[in-house]
Figure 1: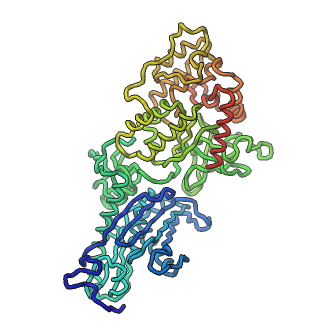
Figure 2: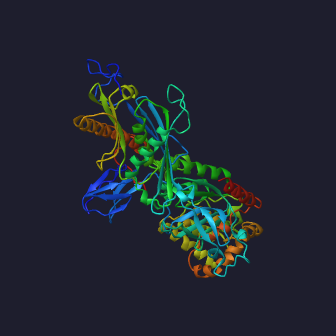
Figure 3: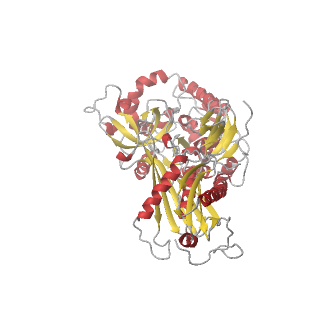
Length: 247
Length: 375
């Protein structure tokens, strides 16, 4: 990755006007797809992603079913119109890989053993991409899974950090991803304090790695607060305490 | 156990620290009890649980469910119970132990598309759930409008001691059968009433977790907030030995569901089917008031007064028998079972006596079938 121009100006502002430790604007809506058992829509800066969760439901083809646990299937897909040049809608190598890492990022948080012989399908559809779409997708998928009422040990929040102009910055966007020094997406379960996804594209020293990792985890915690707020808003409105007996 | 305030939780939220027993939708991690679902956390006598607000139906033994027959093999029916596991109803359960695939026609009892009320007798997650229809109020649902709601909303739809569903039933003059799997069947004579009941049920589903829901449902159904008025039934003296007057127009008399109201109608009827039935009715009324609401008891109190079986002179008996005949086989099969049941107050027999107006019932039955097919 070669760096051609300065991505952080003298005032310490990045290309989109953020400071080094600032997250893009994140907005999450829950329950946007009526047909799905659970769904979420996330705007992570310019990323716009819709996630629908179906299940637990019967496994087809039947031979995929596991006798002791549920099968989690993830499909990350970018719409042809999600990027400036048309993207072929056929699943690319990159999409197949992201589908796999998303599944592995979500699996530790789910109690799949509660639903043997069943399947949970997670469809992540990127409507507009601007760097960090896998992190945004994981965050939205986690909210959608909670909305679907699937037993979870914790929510999964994801956020990237990276190196731009030899500085560690939080939540890198498309330009910083392409022209910066490194990109590290991290998925994290805040209560369990476990990392479920850690990738790195670029070169970092050991110190930079640690700093980058800590920055990303801090970002995940910020994303978690937004996830929590979105779920609370959807299910309990503005109420924070139980007012009426439910049964 | 220390008092725990009920609170809203999402997956991963810590409910409480300490040595509590995890009951439902919670796990223990270290010394903490953690929620695994979105819902309302509360402490029961035995431990901590979360009442979930979302999720699909996962079968449990002894649940009463409403299922649709989707297929049959030579020995059992496959039943869709609105879950990720499809259930089985063994033919022996319906035909008895001497069932023979060669002799007995399974299609005559239950055809594809039929709706049944059934109880789950076995399910251990390694095998699909097994159903039975051998119990009071279980079996084929002849007609009605079915809809699916989230299984997590079923307790709210029933309400405290059945308050919510009773409100809906009484205001719309319908009978609502609720399966714990979230399938609801609304039956009644009045199409408008059924439509209104369906609308109300959907509102309950949408707004299950909000406060003052019962109030809003009452407004939707135009129910006065106070307790129902006294029975508007003429005194017994004006009757000449028949119940025809009380149900002349075919309407359900607006009677409050109290014991005294029931007795006043019973008094009107000079020629009840039998004294035994009358006493059964009272027993049933008392039981309804005292017992917890259950799908199998999901029946408006007011509808008792429209039971032509109890008062044969109300409606042309031909119709009542035509309805009953559709079940005659299953019922004769049940006879052995029923003999032991006769001493108990029976609520389920009302199903065979729905409509006094000939023709409507047949249409309803067709409608019910269509509904089933479309699902």
